[in-house]
Amino acid sequence: MTTSPLVVPIFIPHSGCPHQCVFCNQTAITGQKNSLPDAARVAEIIETYLAHSVPRSRVEVAFFGGNFLGLSPGQISDLLESVRPFFDTGVVHGIRFSTRPDTVTKDRLEQIGTYPVSLVELGVQSMDDQVLAQANRGHTREDTCRAMDLLDAFNMNAGVQIMAGLPGDTREGVFQTTQVLADMHPKTARIYPALVLKNTRLARWYQNGTYQPLTLDQAVEITSRSYHIFNQAGMTVIRMGVHISDAEMGSILAGPWHPAFGHLVLSRILYRETVRKIQTLGTKTLSGSIQLRIHPSRESRLRGDRNTNLHRMKKKFPGMDFRVWPDPTMVIDQVKVVKIPA
Image 1: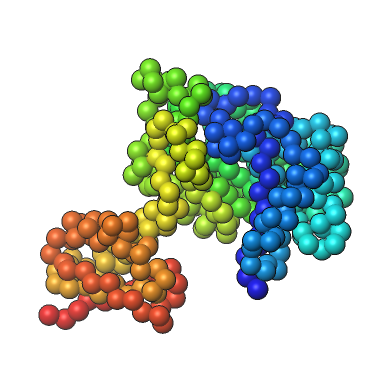
Image 2: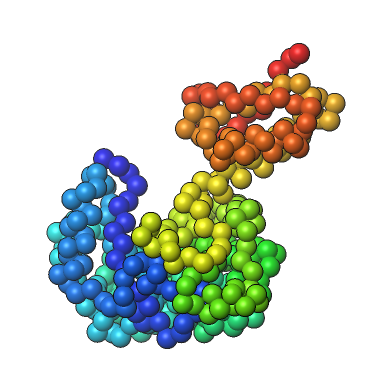
């Protein structure tokens, strides 16, 4: 039985959202219109996922794409009750959802307190009030701080979502947002680079030349640094980059989208660690052959997309020849740099 949980996503695009963020077009991302699924539809989605998944020790239902706690009390109850038959029989073990920080209130948390809520993900995006205002988020840094305090008081696990490349933001601003949130010790994080989607205000700004999205390389570099900050704080980064199906690709006008964005980020992190270890060899030995020992499951990550990492290393250390050595005895995600005698 697989130990990682099965997360069953149920999308509620834009539902409960009082604002239209400059970057947001949830219908384009999810392929769904703005409507809430009824109990029959929720049951159908859960049963379909269960039927096509390998056995899991834990199953969670996730309401994504909207502002869950911004729904009316009746709508919240209807959605939660639609899952109740599954956790009453032990088929589903938890419920998670995404919501805006400003909709996390004592009343709402009391309402959901009788359900097995395993994670509340806050769409923070930034901890810079000027960036939030320019993105038309409609909430502030203080709203996020207040929400985190409330979730802690109710003993509920918190997750945070941040976005790199928002109008008016900088790489240093993203890192500051990341560090501030990491210091609050949420359980999980998601890191999204901003994409320019059709039918958004960001699309108009891009088309008239007043907004320039991050390049793919910039997005990978910024995300890798934020990942490191979250990881050092003991958090789990559960997603990097936006998942968009082939059918929805036409909604992207511009921006750093890649089908394996997370792999690119983890590969960049491993590249930096490898370079650091090479440099510890000392300047007098930076020539000749170097053996890079890595667990076979991480060889492609070390090499990088189309051997990008190896090309970068060769350029950075032109006097050296690099050889990747798959070694099943190596600890996963660690690389060993060995100087081969001439």
